[in-house]
Image (tube, rainbow, N blue to C red; front, side):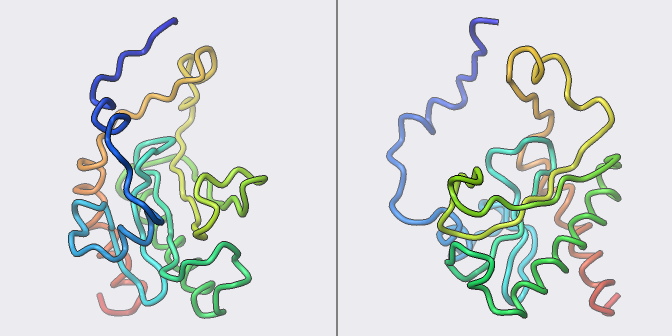
Length: 168
């Protein structure tokens, strides 16, 4: 395959990107739907990844703008794992995934795309989701839009979080 046409990307690649941390901007904004913020905890939030590996690819993003896990206070680290568990349960319930990749890349050398702001990835996986496009062409096919993922996941994550907190 010589070309994969993606004309919807033109606006993004030709626009001037704002200064500063994308996570800090999304977390400070008032519009959670537009920023795909699914849930807000006390120290962290669940967001859809803007450039997902698979449909439903979420991140737990700390409110604190720190680069290292060790820079977060213990309560923020604990909540990060609790939100990961909530996300895992919600993803399995909503998307019927067969498994999950859960992890973080700390520092550029470890593969962090945004190394200055600690975050944890939760990627739904299905048997056979690595198909010929990824294997042969190095191209991922994500079948669901971010907006559709948000609409599907937001109410389920809220429900799972309420049950987890003993409020449901």
